[in-house]
Image 1: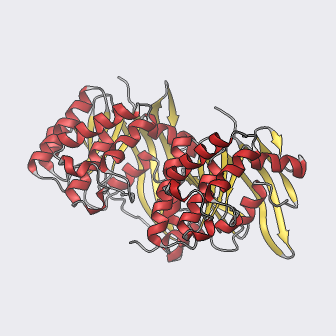
Image 2 (image 1 turned 135 degrees about the vertical axis):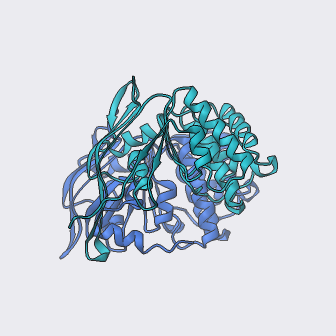
Length: 252
Length: 232
């Protein structure tokens, strides 16, 4: 079998007396969607930030495609984030430039990877706006004039336009209306399958995890208490905390 | 004789931590071998553990002890030990499961739901969609519904979408949990012919059939699942 795309071992992180990560190990393979679920404060967002090099752990190792992510330095991690990786923030304002046009937001990321031909960049931006169901006629509008759902779709277009191999997503549907969430989840599901992306997604939404993820990690107080194929973890949870989490979901 | 699906010494219990850790044994030392082209019907009273056994065979439930050997990719794999990725590969290429209820996804049409596992299994999108439409027609789902998400469909219509999805990829191992529960006589007959054809191409099938008429038409033998008498 192939090797994991990203592999982390023995991650420890403390904020004062609070344990954010306690000897966490994670692997993700090419084309695999892994959800990290747990309540607020369980350490899931810290894990995502450490794996993506946005935050350094107290100790541990992170290997991406054979490269030592923690040892490569800030410049190396920024290069990965420009080329091989993408990060979709919960708040689109953290991933977009609100004063730059929608097309510019997409084009900017392409240009950061070396694209120079204006017509091609504009063409790619229009194509990606359509793929995330934003009318390409809105290309020259700044995202501050967009609804929250549109902003989030634009952030996804900006992230995926460079065809990253691994995308980190932090609560991408958080704070959106339910109907908007459904559309966004379906969009993510299709794009991820079409592009064969590996995705590490943090969510507290069990239904979203079931819809999107091949595999689930359950975190509590900085520890991965259970992991496995999504339907097994959700239908036959073993750990008391996972049982509580699954039992707390309201059936629609 | 070759057995694409073998369960050996399978046991399964549930521990309900939210109910004070109550321990519920469901399966004890179950051994079942299913041959190529054979359909085994699980029999036993309601609550005996038929669906639990089915879910263990699919890897949807973990197993306490025992082995579940599936012939896959030219070898044999024990699903009781397989990791998530290996289990996914088995489900993609080798083993299908038709549950009683369709899990609907907002905005995904009936035809896409049926085509999806065929595409995942390596068919071209065009071939998968053609076969999906043909199966839906065969199961008497009107063409006007093929392009719609099944959330608003009746129970019987949803079940037929589920059946088309399960029979699309020609899995070597097929698990059927009450495949005819909410179908009329005409559609039950279609399901009987789908099962008969799957057996003819060599599929190993395990089914739960409350409809004894259907069961008698497709099952080669019955396998009794008996409730565990808790001696404690």
